[in-house]
Image (cartoon, rainbow, N blue to C red):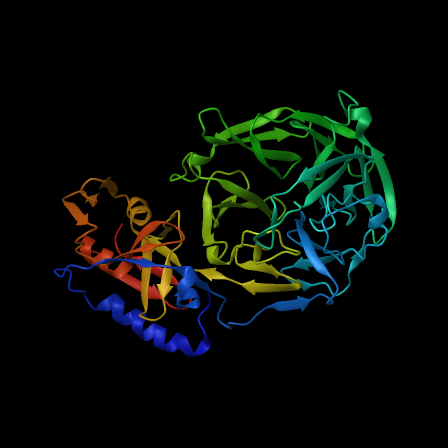
Length: 480
């Protein structure tokens, strides 16, 4: 993904050439298919700072495998690993596990592995921990191994190959929490007294979250308990809206629930710890191009809830702590590196440590990188798009998604499927681009299914100037 050092001077010359040499738009160009999978590092979506250096990396011992990773309130992660390569889990086999946590923050990777108490819940040895949180005093919280067993068969795949024996994830449902430090349990808490019913088949602990001084426990389908982490007392009960897909702690003892409403519009409902609703807003009001077809795969609190990263189809949008405005945008993963298999460890996983620092997990290796994405700006404002811009390092041109970039510039865009024609409605004129015989070169980026154009050619078509800043990887479009 990143430019090699020897390519940077050459690529810079090509970029400057492409920005200041006007292309011959009278010649018809062909619409080509570009692919990240095929071209790999030739397509550059950002760079890792002026030094181009890896912040830090760490490799676990050969007998350990990472199986899950858990984001903590202080922007760090706990990577869970053990010595198991099997799916079956039971109380007896858990006693033989060499399991523990490796802490990762933007400052570095801890060399000391935190041992876990044997009583901790393992939905499956190979699938990692069920849930993990850490409070402001540095104590970890997780779920105690339960006694009610339930087996869930996984698809009959083994490293992408059909298998006669489908893998099984085993859950031992529990209503007990444990607070622990390095291998030592400090507190056991049975939450049954806080539940409307004691039926463990309906009210078992699904997830834990900590943030804003509150420990949140997701129980059953729609109950969220807010607990005081100091003594385990109940602060309030929250009934989550139907179709809640994500939960994220906020500042001042609040929590956000990402909800897909009946009209398929995604909403953010904010609740106080005592159970009362604080506010509700539509995600489209924050991200104007967001539609019902978009899927939010994760929400990451940053700086203890002062910011959030919302992940949509691999794009990361950093928003303020009240979900009112977008602060920055970045692409969060390499689509071609994501495999579809039941694997013995974490593969090709990228998580944000901050807006510009990210963590990579692959097998038994952990890395930390600074990452600066390509940004498009006009009149001092960042242009938000639903897919990333990229630099073709072999030719030195920056490519942008046509529709999203034009809309972000305030241009109305229409597409006629019958004639395969894109229409750009400007204030003083109308421009038409036929995909079969385009007046400017167009590409389709396979992994995003989006039509891309050179930012220089688009600017020329619109009769505006454009500049490139090599240090910040920013394209600036002239005009208001």
